[in-house]
Image 1 (cartoon, rainbow, N blue to C red):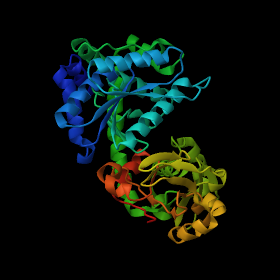
Image 2: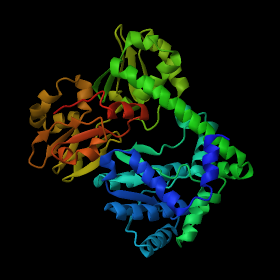
Image 3: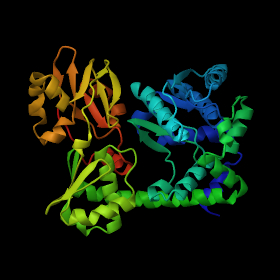
Image 4: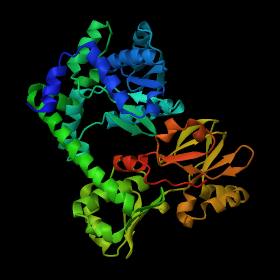
Length: 456
């Protein structure tokens, strides 16, 4: 019997101790700094998130940690507010501190679930990031099987077919999913045993949503769930092996001029298999271009021959070309219109231009250097020496800080987002900036210290 199927069978009637052990096991696997961080559990009111909040509260009590459940009201339906209050009341009944986060933006007419997911993640990540906390999600094995089959249906890559990760990052926040090897039935049983009054969202039965259709399919063909999870485990193994190979390659042949400019040594790049060339470029362009998702493989394959032949192309927010020595991937600076300056409060973080996460120890304004140069030319001149290693156009895209006293500061880029948790005091002493979207390949690459860039 395949290991993943056997694991599901063994966990089908998991005891409360086994569910608790799933969280313990995951925290044992992460860095010590994350184990000391405040915990935030995303709670929808369903059995999965309520059981996780209950278990996370026990974990926090045992280890002397702060824990808070986060309930998001998307304001899509008129009854959503009262439903959220009911979830808050249920959490209070079990002595779990909770915070209600409301989304005030109007929902679009189409792709509502995708929009809701983006908005929800942004609010959850922003709340957790303000405290240097860890986000916990109650996704389980049934969710994982649905996700893998949805990605298969949409021709995803090996990385996509690997499914959700137990440990990942989103907008600078560590996200943990301890229940991915547990079926939903085990979580339902836990709720019953501990008198957790969970609710079921009506949209979970609406076939207009792809996930609902996939769930209904799996209910008819339950054998496919185990097969999907088995395929996901295999793809995760393959993807991890590929990442290790590419990490080694990048450590030798990547030149990170800045988060807006990456260069790959040409001859070693040409020597790679075409599939690995495309794989690398997708991640490079996702990082430099600030895209949430990488470009499609076929789009990269279309431009690659002409790029290596000396022609210049644009894709995924990047301007890509090759010289005799390097494949050069700068940000497509001319597509970015002038940005509006935004306020940042003392010791807080903000998302800027949907591509940077910025934390400041002081209150002031965040603006691109190009806007600083136009509005405050004397202030811009004082930080120019710290930015003169950049070409002029990429330099104009770099976020800068202007204090309330009129004094500017150049930014200090962080490529290793784990430092947000492990070195909080150092982060508080400077203007820290790190890319909002770091693809998984580069996330691992930077995390292990192969490359670091500073403008201090």
